[in-house]
Length: 167
Image 1 (tube, rainbow, N blue to C red):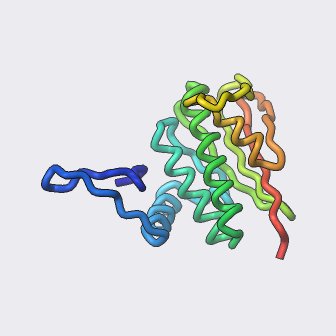
Image 2: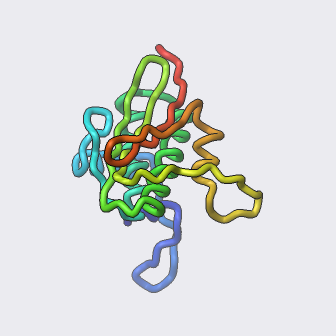
């Protein structure tokens, strides 16, 4: 069941069991997403503006950062979390039907870009410890090395960068 890793799943007898997560299963989901939507490291991938697109973007980011670029688990975890936050913001706040995901690997860093047709700027809000929502850009601000927004003639690109060691 896509997007439900780590959650309890109903069994055939009505009792709930923990979903079985494994790197191999997640890798398989990532490769399926890559096959279905394309590789955001080679060209912009168009995703529908639906909540489940966050899981698709996470899987694409994991495949690109871990498998294609062969970067470590820490960089992969940060990239996967932050791409999920950008996608969540785009789904909740832009009113767009689709958005574009692109991942680049300039020397010494990775850059993840999310393009949408809204010219409304994201707003970094103060976050309190007990807040249940509104942490997306806060996380992007804290975990990325740089982030920003580029206004386009029609819409914007919200992006973040993570520094990585060159081999």
